[in-house]
Image 1: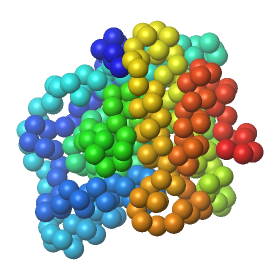
Image 2: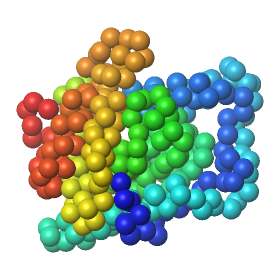
Image 3: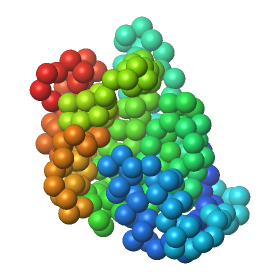
Amino acid sequence: MRWERGRRSDNVEDRRRSGGGMRLGGLSGGTIVFALLASYFLGVDPMTMLGILTRVQVGGPMMESGSSEPIDDQGRDFVRAILGDTEDTWSELFAKGGHQYQPPRLVLFNGMVRSACGGASAASGPFYCPADQQAYLDLSFFDEMKQRLGGGGDFAEAYVIAHEIGHHVQTLLGTTAEVDSARRGGQDVRGAEGLLVRQELQADCLAGVWAHHAQQRHQWLEPGDVEEALATATAIGDDRLQRQSGGAVVPDAFTHGSAEQRVAWFRQGFEAGALERCDTFAERNL
């Protein structure tokens, strides 16, 4: 992927520290990876899990270390390029509909971070907080994605970022508020056909819409790039992750959709390049 062609966004806030940022004293890498898989893909609260594991294994508090200087590296440059291009895409598409796109801020962090949605850790994986309209990313997630989940590559990483920005688009369009309203009203939003899965699959489709327009602007995709993204979408399907964890596939516990669904909806967005083709909520069969 020739991502260097992308315009750099000024909406990246680097909260990383050269000394490592927030860290969990004594927790092993394997423990944090376990929490990452359980929380981000299976819907378990990562802060609760890590708090328990910290007390059990260490008996000590979470600690902060490092200087206040941001880290100016290729990872930050990559994120700025991808975020800038999502801004260009959604600004153009919103304008066509007579609306103005309000870009989110993307926060880079190491280890631990606080958002308007509460505290979070690297084990949360990338996430979007509608309360402050910011996306959060610990770049170490990309290493875990390559080493443990069977996905990876620069376009796959761009897909992950674009998925979180898709959640911002949903917030601006009112979709997030509608799902939250249904949940507060007592509706069960979980499961393979539930609103949460539909929301996540729509974000996959919106990531595909971005990729479609980015390719038209830059012709920056290289052979194998799309396959990287599709392989990553497959690797992080709920069914695939449940099998990897040693359990049976339980559709009622799905939070993001199956591997097949995630691939299909990303591909639909990528091929169509149109927001209206991403209405997962209107589909009877996902």
